[in-house]
Length: 617
Image 1 (cartoon, helix red, strand yellow):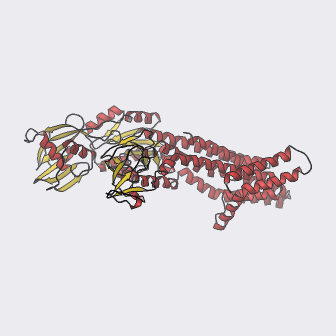
Image 2: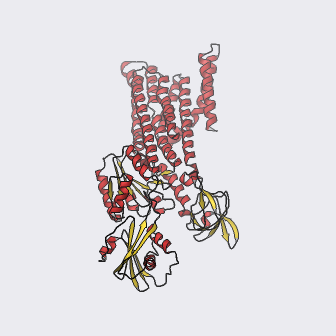
Image 3: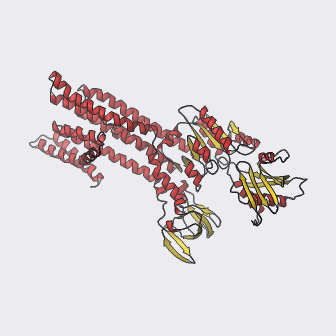
């Protein structure tokens, strides 16, 4: 039967019983009220009793269902029919509100789960076949018509369309996709017909990775959630033993009334049920994850949400995080002694960078602008944090930073000007340099200011770029600590040092582009991947994924995390405080079953309603 119908009908019959019992005084009213209370109890209490029975058979005895069941059956045994019905009515009303809150939170991330495609239009020699996305292979061509979801990641080879990426990034403004643009599964085609060459199988596509991330988020619990689970495990049997002692000891040893002390023990059982904590705390963290996802921030578990709330230090990578990561060749400077002109120097650099996936390499190939013949190319070596080496046309070409030239014993002139410089050497002889410029993101400076305003003690920027370039950018953004000229291992070593320097109970976050920073992302307390949609390395290594390339999303995530933590601790303090007071009053015989109802299910209702505030962020 529909739970909503049970709650409404059970509450209605309970209220009717209360009206008959207290508002009217005619013959048979007590019997009619008793019948209504019984109907109400069965409507809303049967599910609790069934769950109690099933858990007992599984050996899971001491939980809130057991306490509710024993307390209400005991109340019925001593004639407290209205109290027994009231406990079940308000408990189920709290569960209903909890379910509604969970549904609201799920709606915040429902767009992420809705990105799962149902089919793909596979183009086979001009014939379109509707197939399961799992059947499509890398290199196949698919057709996406207006109104359809893009089922797999790929490259547009024909057509143009506006794409709605709201389910992936939270952005409401559509983006234009043209030939040679990369498109991601889960995007919705709004107005054109696209022919897409598939670059990833369904299992490796962006949609699948995000769905997996969201579905697994609930399994990673915050410390406070784990504590409450352990607390309930030991607390409940302790309370059961205490209630039994209160019910039996005074009548046996002092001759007190059995009914009076059994009543007190039942009041104690109702008060002691940890419903408020069990219901509101997981709901709070789930609501926080949902609220963050609505803002385009995917958090892999409530433990990372909790860590975000307690950030002490944020370490930023530079390229692709605080800068656009879209490089352009700004200057080509052949060495006067090399005998090369600008075109020949650029060609040598393009040959060296032909296989590299680094954005700087892509900018050099783009500036060269011609097809690069792979004939005669060999001996390609990519050296992380240094550069590349390749054998081409009988020459050994090196392209990289000053550290690479120094390691190979090749002298270079002093580096001047802004931007990143790529030095080129052929057969051990210096040929010149190419300057690459990057652009700062519009919201980078604001992000640093906002993080400081939130009270974070330390912001640091690490970069593999020249120290002078990194320091200039740090001054522009207002970052006090900066390290440049770093290799990937240097970043790992520095993050280790920063972790040791942070406050013991606080957390360190590393924010990177998710491509070359996987070791540091995994090492930090919270690894945050910036602008990493479509990057397997980011989604796998990071704990938090910002669905756009805006660093300001980190500020939003911290605000959501802090508000969630505040609400959770409000509920914990309120629930334990009220429960403690009424436990004392109940054991002394001062609190009745109605005060017990407020202390248990009433507090649970208030805690759940308080948690709803998270969902309204």
